[in-house]
Length: 280
Image (cartoon, rainbow, N blue to C red; front, side, top):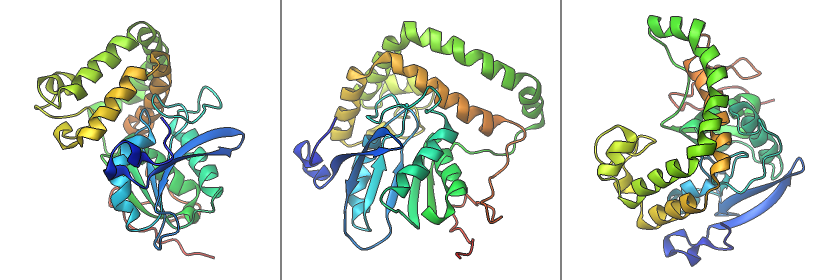
Protein backbone atom coordinates (compact mmCIF):
# COMPACT_ATOMS: atom_id res chain seq x y z
CA UNK A 1 0.00 0.00 0.00
CA UNK A 2 1.56 3.27 -1.16
CA UNK A 3 0.42 6.82 -0.44
CA UNK A 4 2.01 10.12 -1.38
CA UNK A 5 0.49 11.33 1.88
CA UNK A 6 -1.05 8.88 4.33
CA UNK A 7 -3.28 11.70 5.48
CA UNK A 8 -5.54 10.57 2.63
CA UNK A 9 -6.61 7.72 4.94
CA UNK A 10 -6.83 9.64 8.20
CA UNK A 11 -5.76 13.12 9.37
CA UNK A 12 -3.63 11.65 12.17
CA UNK A 13 -1.27 10.22 9.52
CA UNK A 14 -0.98 13.45 7.54
CA UNK A 15 2.55 14.31 6.44
CA UNK A 16 3.69 10.66 6.31
CA UNK A 17 4.65 9.61 2.81
CA UNK A 18 5.64 6.42 1.02
CA UNK A 19 8.88 6.43 -0.96
CA UNK A 20 11.11 3.97 -2.79
CA UNK A 21 14.87 3.77 -3.26
CA UNK A 22 17.22 1.12 -4.56
CA UNK A 23 19.71 -0.46 -2.16
CA UNK A 24 22.22 -2.88 -3.66
CA UNK A 25 19.96 -3.52 -6.62
CA UNK A 26 16.90 -4.20 -4.43
CA UNK A 27 13.84 -1.97 -4.47
CA UNK A 28 13.09 -0.73 -0.95
CA UNK A 29 9.86 0.83 0.30
CA UNK A 30 9.93 3.10 3.34
CA UNK A 31 7.80 5.66 5.19
CA UNK A 32 9.12 9.08 6.11
CA UNK A 33 8.01 12.25 7.86
CA UNK A 34 9.53 15.40 9.29
CA UNK A 35 12.18 15.83 6.61
CA UNK A 36 14.37 18.86 7.25
CA UNK A 37 13.34 19.25 10.87
CA UNK A 38 16.08 19.75 13.47
CA UNK A 39 16.96 16.82 15.66
CA UNK A 40 18.35 13.31 15.19
CA UNK A 41 16.90 10.92 12.67
CA UNK A 42 14.55 8.35 14.20
CA UNK A 43 14.98 5.03 12.38
CA UNK A 44 12.12 2.61 13.08
CA UNK A 45 12.60 -1.16 12.73
CA UNK A 46 9.37 -3.14 12.67
CA UNK A 47 8.79 -6.75 13.85
CA UNK A 48 10.32 -9.05 11.29
CA UNK A 49 7.06 -10.47 9.91
CA UNK A 50 5.32 -7.07 9.79
CA UNK A 51 5.93 -3.85 7.90
CA UNK A 52 6.78 -0.20 8.41
CA UNK A 53 3.04 0.56 8.50
CA UNK A 54 2.93 -0.91 12.01
CA UNK A 55 4.62 2.33 13.17
CA UNK A 56 2.11 4.71 11.57
CA UNK A 57 0.49 5.84 14.83
CA UNK A 58 3.91 6.83 16.25
CA UNK A 59 5.56 8.41 13.21
CA UNK A 60 3.74 11.76 13.44
CA UNK A 61 4.51 12.32 17.17
CA UNK A 62 8.14 11.29 16.66
CA UNK A 63 8.49 13.63 13.69
CA UNK A 64 8.13 16.56 16.12
CA UNK A 65 11.56 15.52 17.45
CA UNK A 66 13.28 15.13 14.09
CA UNK A 67 13.09 13.29 10.75
CA UNK A 68 11.55 9.79 10.89
CA UNK A 69 12.35 6.94 8.51
CA UNK A 70 10.70 3.50 8.70
CA UNK A 71 11.80 0.97 6.05
CA UNK A 72 10.09 -2.27 5.13
CA UNK A 73 12.59 -5.03 5.87
CA UNK A 74 13.16 -7.64 3.13
CA UNK A 75 11.29 -10.92 3.30
CA UNK A 76 8.31 -9.80 5.36
CA UNK A 77 4.68 -10.86 5.11
CA UNK A 78 3.19 -7.38 4.68
CA UNK A 79 6.06 -5.19 3.49
CA UNK A 80 6.76 -3.90 -0.03
CA UNK A 81 10.54 -4.29 -0.12
CA UNK A 82 11.78 -6.92 -2.54
CA UNK A 83 13.43 -10.06 -1.16
CA UNK A 84 16.81 -10.39 -2.90
CA UNK A 85 17.46 -14.01 -1.79
CA UNK A 86 15.76 -16.80 0.25
CA UNK A 87 17.62 -15.97 3.47
CA UNK A 88 16.93 -12.23 3.34
CA UNK A 89 14.35 -12.47 6.14
CA UNK A 90 16.92 -13.61 8.72
CA UNK A 91 18.07 -11.28 11.49
CA UNK A 92 21.69 -11.06 10.32
CA UNK A 93 20.92 -10.22 6.68
CA UNK A 94 18.30 -7.69 7.83
CA UNK A 95 20.92 -5.95 9.98
CA UNK A 96 23.25 -5.79 6.97
CA UNK A 97 20.36 -4.46 4.91
CA UNK A 98 19.85 -1.65 7.47
CA UNK A 99 23.54 -0.75 7.29
CA UNK A 100 23.32 -0.41 3.50
CA UNK A 101 19.97 1.40 3.71
CA UNK A 102 21.24 3.93 6.28
CA UNK A 103 24.29 4.66 4.14
CA UNK A 104 22.16 5.86 1.22
CA UNK A 105 20.94 9.11 2.89
CA UNK A 106 24.03 9.26 5.14
CA UNK A 107 22.21 8.63 8.43
CA UNK A 108 24.48 9.10 11.45
CA UNK A 109 23.92 9.11 15.22
CA UNK A 110 20.29 8.03 14.75
CA UNK A 111 17.82 7.05 17.43
CA UNK A 112 17.00 3.49 16.38
CA UNK A 113 13.69 2.08 17.60
CA UNK A 114 13.41 -1.73 17.41
CA UNK A 115 10.17 -3.59 18.12
CA UNK A 116 10.04 -7.30 19.04
CA UNK A 117 12.26 -9.21 16.59
CA UNK A 118 13.14 -5.83 15.09
CA UNK A 119 14.93 -5.08 18.36
CA UNK A 120 17.42 -7.88 17.72
CA UNK A 121 17.94 -6.57 14.18
CA UNK A 122 18.53 -3.09 15.67
CA UNK A 123 21.15 -4.37 18.13
CA UNK A 124 22.97 -6.27 15.36
CA UNK A 125 22.81 -3.15 13.19
CA UNK A 126 24.25 -1.00 16.00
CA UNK A 127 27.05 -3.52 16.43
CA UNK A 128 27.83 -3.54 12.71
CA UNK A 129 27.52 0.23 12.12
CA UNK A 130 28.16 2.08 15.42
CA UNK A 131 28.63 5.44 13.68
CA UNK A 132 25.06 5.22 12.38
CA UNK A 133 23.50 4.70 15.83
CA UNK A 134 23.36 7.17 18.70
CA UNK A 135 20.70 5.56 20.88
CA UNK A 136 18.67 2.36 20.96
CA UNK A 137 15.02 2.25 21.99
CA UNK A 138 13.87 -1.37 22.26
CA UNK A 139 10.21 -2.32 22.60
CA UNK A 140 9.34 -5.89 23.76
CA UNK A 141 12.80 -6.95 22.56
CA UNK A 142 13.64 -10.49 21.48
CA UNK A 143 17.18 -10.52 22.89
CA UNK A 144 19.49 -13.15 24.40
CA UNK A 145 19.25 -13.58 28.14
CA UNK A 146 20.16 -16.01 30.94
CA UNK A 147 18.54 -19.45 30.72
CA UNK A 148 17.67 -21.92 33.49
CA UNK A 149 20.04 -24.87 33.66
CA UNK A 150 17.48 -27.33 32.26
CA UNK A 151 16.87 -25.10 29.22
CA UNK A 152 20.60 -24.79 28.61
CA UNK A 153 20.84 -28.58 28.45
CA UNK A 154 17.81 -28.80 26.16
CA UNK A 155 19.11 -26.22 23.68
CA UNK A 156 22.61 -27.65 23.71
CA UNK A 157 21.56 -31.19 22.77
CA UNK A 158 18.06 -31.02 21.27
CA UNK A 159 16.92 -27.45 20.65
CA UNK A 160 19.15 -26.52 17.77
CA UNK A 161 18.67 -29.81 15.81
CA UNK A 162 14.90 -29.54 16.29
CA UNK A 163 15.00 -25.95 15.09
CA UNK A 164 16.90 -26.92 11.95
CA UNK A 165 14.61 -29.86 11.21
CA UNK A 166 11.37 -28.15 12.25
CA UNK A 167 11.57 -25.04 10.07
CA UNK A 168 11.10 -26.90 6.73
CA UNK A 169 8.23 -28.90 8.22
CA UNK A 170 6.54 -25.73 9.45
CA UNK A 171 6.93 -24.12 6.02
CA UNK A 172 5.14 -27.11 4.47
CA UNK A 173 2.33 -26.90 7.01
CA UNK A 174 1.89 -23.20 6.35
CA UNK A 175 1.60 -23.79 2.63
CA UNK A 176 -1.51 -25.83 3.44
CA UNK A 177 -2.97 -23.90 6.37
CA UNK A 178 -1.53 -20.39 5.94
CA UNK A 179 -4.80 -18.86 4.77
CA UNK A 180 -6.67 -20.24 7.80
CA UNK A 181 -4.00 -18.82 10.11
CA UNK A 182 -4.27 -15.38 8.51
CA UNK A 183 -8.08 -15.51 8.74
CA UNK A 184 -7.83 -16.38 12.43
CA UNK A 185 -5.55 -13.42 13.05
CA UNK A 186 -7.95 -11.25 11.06
CA UNK A 187 -10.75 -12.22 13.45
CA UNK A 188 -8.45 -11.25 16.33
CA UNK A 189 -8.05 -7.67 15.07
CA UNK A 190 -11.65 -7.40 13.96
CA UNK A 191 -12.75 -8.46 17.45
CA UNK A 192 -10.87 -5.54 19.01
CA UNK A 193 -9.01 -7.73 21.49
CA UNK A 194 -11.91 -9.59 23.01
CA UNK A 195 -12.32 -13.35 23.44
CA UNK A 196 -10.67 -14.00 20.09
CA UNK A 197 -7.55 -12.25 21.28
CA UNK A 198 -7.44 -14.34 24.43
CA UNK A 199 -7.69 -17.54 22.41
CA UNK A 200 -5.05 -16.51 19.88
CA UNK A 201 -2.51 -14.99 22.25
CA UNK A 202 -2.91 -17.36 25.15
CA UNK A 203 -3.18 -14.41 27.52
CA UNK A 204 -5.86 -12.30 29.08
CA UNK A 205 -8.57 -10.56 27.15
CA UNK A 206 -7.12 -7.89 24.94
CA UNK A 207 -3.61 -9.32 24.92
CA UNK A 208 -2.19 -9.22 21.43
CA UNK A 209 0.24 -11.70 19.85
CA UNK A 210 3.17 -9.36 20.52
CA UNK A 211 2.19 -8.91 24.17
CA UNK A 212 0.35 -5.63 23.72
CA UNK A 213 -3.21 -4.52 24.33
CA UNK A 214 -5.13 -4.44 21.06
CA UNK A 215 -7.70 -2.07 22.55
CA UNK A 216 -4.98 0.62 22.46
CA UNK A 217 -4.70 0.45 18.67
CA UNK A 218 -6.30 3.33 16.84
CA UNK A 219 -9.37 2.35 14.78
CA UNK A 220 -7.44 3.37 11.67
CA UNK A 221 -4.54 1.05 12.55
CA UNK A 222 -6.90 -1.85 13.30
CA UNK A 223 -8.57 -1.35 9.91
CA UNK A 224 -5.20 -1.17 8.13
CA UNK A 225 -3.96 -4.36 9.78
CA UNK A 226 -7.17 -6.11 8.79
CA UNK A 227 -6.74 -4.97 5.18
CA UNK A 228 -3.15 -6.24 5.16
CA UNK A 229 -4.25 -9.63 6.49
CA UNK A 230 -6.97 -9.94 3.85
CA UNK A 231 -4.54 -9.18 1.02
CA UNK A 232 -1.54 -11.13 2.39
CA UNK A 233 -0.12 -13.94 0.28
CA UNK A 234 0.01 -17.08 2.51
CA UNK A 235 3.02 -18.31 0.56
CA UNK A 236 5.07 -15.52 2.13
CA UNK A 237 4.54 -17.05 5.58
CA UNK A 238 7.58 -19.18 4.78
CA UNK A 239 9.74 -16.06 5.09
CA UNK A 240 8.22 -15.47 8.53
CA UNK A 241 9.38 -18.95 9.56
CA UNK A 242 12.88 -18.14 8.29
CA UNK A 243 12.87 -14.91 10.32
CA UNK A 244 11.58 -16.60 13.47
CA UNK A 245 14.11 -19.43 13.28
CA UNK A 246 16.95 -16.92 12.90
CA UNK A 247 15.83 -15.21 16.10
CA UNK A 248 15.06 -18.24 18.28
CA UNK A 249 18.54 -19.66 17.82
CA UNK A 250 20.44 -16.62 19.18
CA UNK A 251 17.81 -15.83 21.82
CA UNK A 252 17.42 -19.34 23.25
CA UNK A 253 20.83 -20.76 22.44
CA UNK A 254 23.10 -21.31 25.48
CA UNK A 255 26.10 -19.60 23.93
CA UNK A 256 24.25 -16.34 23.15
CA UNK A 257 26.18 -13.28 24.30
CA UNK A 258 25.46 -9.53 24.05
CA UNK A 259 27.37 -8.18 21.05
CA UNK A 260 30.39 -5.92 21.25
CA UNK A 261 31.00 -3.22 18.72
CA UNK A 262 34.15 -3.09 16.67
CA UNK A 263 35.78 -0.72 19.17
CA UNK A 264 35.18 -3.17 22.01
CA UNK A 265 32.38 -1.33 23.82
CA UNK A 266 29.61 -3.54 25.18
CA UNK A 267 26.19 -2.78 23.69
CA UNK A 268 23.92 -2.31 26.70
CA UNK A 269 20.76 -2.96 24.68
CA UNK A 270 18.47 -3.88 27.56
CA UNK A 271 18.98 -0.51 29.22
CA UNK A 272 18.87 1.40 25.95
CA UNK A 273 21.98 3.20 27.17
CA UNK A 274 23.76 5.62 24.86
CA UNK A 275 26.77 4.05 23.23
CA UNK A 276 30.02 5.27 24.78
CA UNK A 277 32.44 4.41 22.02
CA UNK A 278 34.64 7.37 21.09
CA UNK A 279 34.51 8.81 17.61
CA UNK A 280 37.61 9.28 15.58
